[in-house]
Length: 120
Image (cartoon, rainbow, N blue to C red; front, top):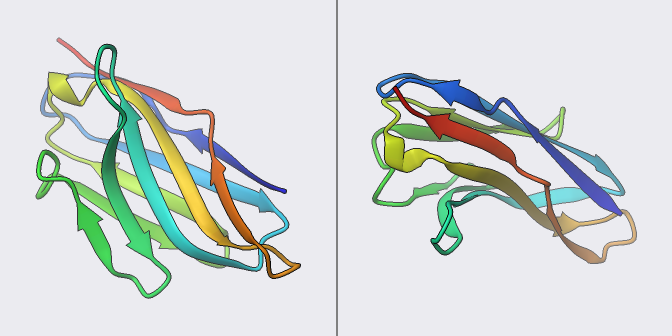
């Protein structure tokens, strides 16, 4: 099994910055895609950013130019650097890893989420 744990959330003022981390553990052979999602009250879960094993990135229009996704393959850790934060960024942020486990079977794992609150 593959487990993910997010951290780094907290309370920040508008315009501030925050870095989220997602550490993976378990039966991991490869990580093909890492994604960051967010869920705000009364809203659908939104894809924020993704990064592939080759380093290709994609961002939602709402965060483009403000957020940056990266990963450390050796540490099996993903990151989301968030700058110029806005109140509308307030949400629970979740990470998602897709890849192959050590039996060469596919996995699709989610973390429990970390709360990000942007408020004055």
